Picture 1 (cartoon, rainbow, N blue to C red):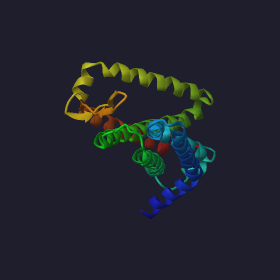
Picture 2: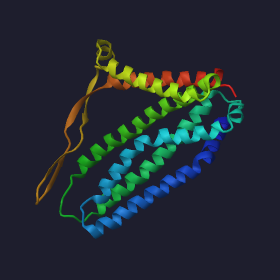
Picture 3: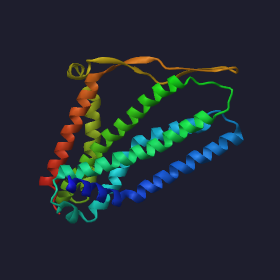
Length: 256
């Protein structure tokens, strides 16, 4: 446990400047639009911008991990000579990235909610619906960012393996592989096997907002749509397998 906590502290030191920059950017954008909305008299402008900025956080963890991994790549021999396993090395990076993601997304969401509550517009929004959709929205953003971050870690590790054998051509081969896997995933979605593995365990989840606007009122409602639990299970199994493969490559195939 002490070794694990030490890795987490080390990862925080590597990327704390990045986190500080992101948090500063979040504050400047939200405060700037809050002041602007009062001047321009645009209802809920800050909350809307907060929603858009939150949506962009789906790319946060992949970019965060890419910067952290590239930093290690400059001294790859020192990183890999750490006695910890590949699972611990990569796990510390992913855990630290997720914590940074939650800090940033929590700051933006909190400021957007504060701006929403301070709004003096005559337009009324039902807070129950906002909470319901907000929870679903944040869940999609965080899980999507984690999914892409895990795949990026795999591609980065694969690149480290390939460049030992083919040098700079490794980038092109990895890009071709990304395109092939994306095509394969699209093809698989339309097969009978995909229906059997994914199309089960439906639950009702809130859909994107349905809004009706008039000059007198702003009516906001949230409907629901059927979502298969099988999709979550399949993606979870896929991510676990990709992470295990990445750890194996890092431990056994990456040369320094």
